[in-house]
Image 1 (cartoon, protein in one colour):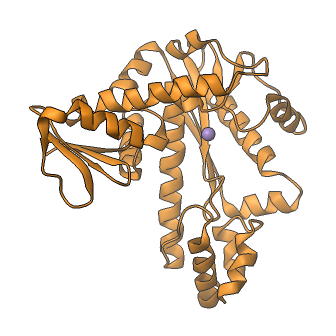
Image 2: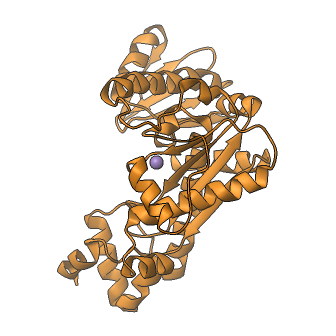
Length: 311
Ligand code: MN
């Protein structure tokens, strides 16, 4: 039986429960509700995970994923008027453009991955139809599946992985993480522009992680400059499908790298930078010594010191 899983907000889950009032059946343990419609069996859990199973699970899920993104957008609009002159015109989102996003920046273990995707008008529609949306609303399994679909569709993309050894070298040389990210995004854009050649390109949207002026200062210090029609926007993955696709590819690559590092060290490396991470660091130090961390982690994070509490 085909199934898809999404992470949705409590608000959306409450709306869904009302919407499916006629179709509610006994929920399994841990579930908020279960609805059985002619199209799908929908089960929402307290964690926010919602499972769509049955004959046409995507048909049922699309409405709610789109709804969640739309309500998010209207909130976002009110909260964040664009103060800088680099906000894209909303009409760009339906035109041929490049979008870039990164993963791994807040995670102690694992690399930083940055990906850029170019989509023309038809491809934007095509990827929306297969469920490419804000990767924060997607489970890891769905992210991996969508990333492999995007690659099979031969959509032009560029991916850069900044492995931990290099990251730690740059950090010791005085590079901020912001500068590393800016350089990665800019190289991804350069590679992708070269790759696509002379096709129509209406603009480039970078999922904004710092003020555009600071981004420019970073890349200028390494003799790069912005390509014309480059725009910056926070939460861009909920507006721009190429950014959403870039985010999915970056995230899938990060997950793959984490799998491989976990295998190398023989311990399942946790994501994020929580206490669980501190405890895992202590385990690794006890088994392998501290120097291996340079290959596995962003060692300047406070976690390295905090791990001493568990040694
Ligand atoms: Mn981002």
